[in-house]
Structure formats: C-alpha cells, structure tokens
Amino acid sequence: MRIAIASDHAAFTMKAELVRWLSDLGHEVDDLGPGGEDSVDYPDYGYKLADHLTAGRAERGIALCGSGIGISIAVNRSPGVRCALVSEPLSAQLCREHNDANALALGARMIGLEMAKACVTAFLETPFGGQRHARRVEKLSRIHQEAR
Image (cartoon, rainbow, N blue to C red; front, side):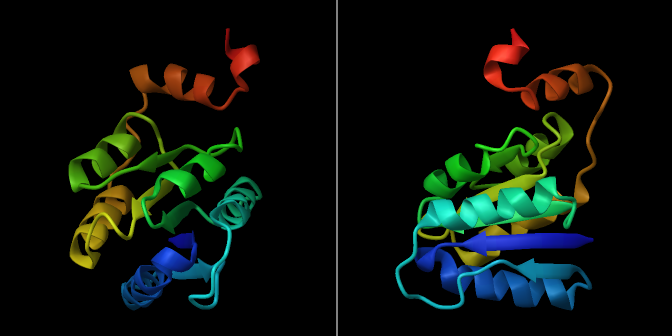
C-alpha cells in the first residue's frame, strides 16, 4: 500500500520510526516531512498530507503532532479527506469500518510507539464496511452547507 505520512516537530521521532517500520513491512511510504526536530507549524504538514491524498498520490495517510488534535483539524479541512484522531486500535478499526477514514491522526505525546503501531495496523488492515455506512460517508465528503 502507498502511505503518506507527515508530522510536526513534536512527532518527528515517532514519524521516523513509523516510516522505517512501514517500509520494513513492504509499504511504499511518502514522508512529507519535516526533516528534523526544528519547530514547524503543524497546519503546513496537515495540508501537505491532505493534498497528497486528494491528488491520489497515496491510498492512506498518517498525520502526527504532539496531541494529534491540531494536525487532524488541518487534514480535515479538505473535503476529500476523512481523518480520525485515535489513541487505541478499536477506534482505528471503527474509523475505517464505519467512516472509511483515509487518514489517521496520532498524538506522539499521548501514546507510545507500540500503541501507535497497533493503531496503524488496525487502520491499514480494516476494510470499509460499505452498505449502510456508504450514504453517511458520502455526506462527509461534501462541504457542510451542501450536506443539508
């Protein structure tokens, strides 16, 4: 699977570990930055990830920042992206099964590397449930005013 990953400075170390791990598992990983721990603005990297996904350059995305909150908000500004902030595998599974999430957000200051890997595994291995969920997911891809 082709996976795009981006973070801010607070999650740089976790991002680097996840890039290595995902590559070792045989995934194609697009590391969208940053390249180090110097302070950066998480919205810039969230927007990069969203653009990458909406352009079809990756099947799934992983967004990381200190809490996961800020970058998930940035990624979700794009109507074609459904990014779920999770901290345990069941939520990662359900965001795929029920919401067809194509991006996962994690907080590097909130969970450890092994929990992050468990969340990513659930996210990558769970298919979308379709059927009754498809109608709702289609609504998520519309701009709010259009959805009413």
